[in-house]
Amino acid sequence: MSDSPLEEARQSWNLLADDWRVQVGTEGDSNRRMNSDPVLWELAGDVRGLAVLDAGCGTGYLSGKLRDKGARVTGVDFAGRMIEIARADHPGIDFRVDSCTELATCEGEEFDLVIANYVLMDTPGLDATMRAFARVLKPGGAAVLVFSHPCFPQGGATVSEDGGEICYRWDFPYFEPRKCVDPPWGHFRTEFLWFHRPLSDYWKAFAAAGFAVVGFEEPRITEDRYHLAENEQKLRNSKTRPYSVAFKLRKTPLGA
Image 1 (cartoon, rainbow, N blue to C red):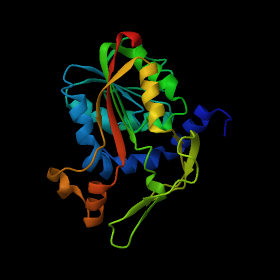
Image 2: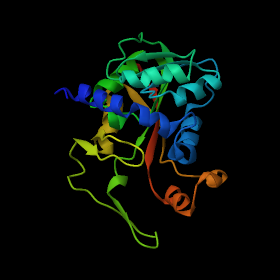
Image 3: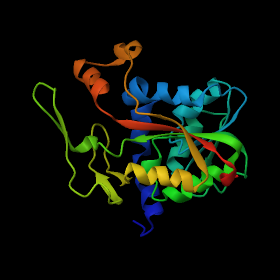
Image 4: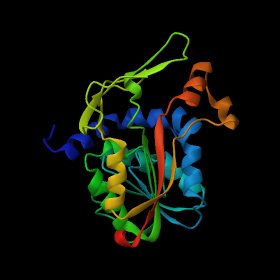
């Protein structure tokens, strides 16, 4: 693999793309359907007629939903294989091979809304990504960001026999940003490359790029979605485990 963290991440997601297509399908995986997508849509609000960037669009399930809700959608992903799949599965949407750290194919002040759904923990360049989001947003535009909860590593969780106690284990200092590699799981055949940062680093990157935080949630299942849980364990997990965080940011004059 390349020595460049960005190229290493790109190659990793190219290898994962076909398995990812199976994982998320056209409706999103179970975590998205049960927990985080309702929060994402609440934070995004009415997207009809808006120019929306699906940043890190993967195989395009969210881009398709945005289009169905009336948005004018552009989807970008740095993994070429992801974009190939997205174009095949969602014809008519403008998909581009582009890195969130640059958004070289996007004009300044082009979009009303940027959505990055489980993306920020996968980019090696958080600060550059936030600056790029600010550049392509119109004045007063918003960004909705959902990403894995950095405080609670689910891969390191151990659960008691009765499921009533969950312990999270850190094998390195929480405040130390670092590249992490998770082994394959489920139907995935290759490793997952991601980047740990403490939650405060995200908050500082948002402010440095000229964003104000106007909404924050830790998604969890609500009663109207209990029926989506495949079994009692998944329902209990969705009630008790903090899988992700969700931010809504507003571009301030500093970020114009």
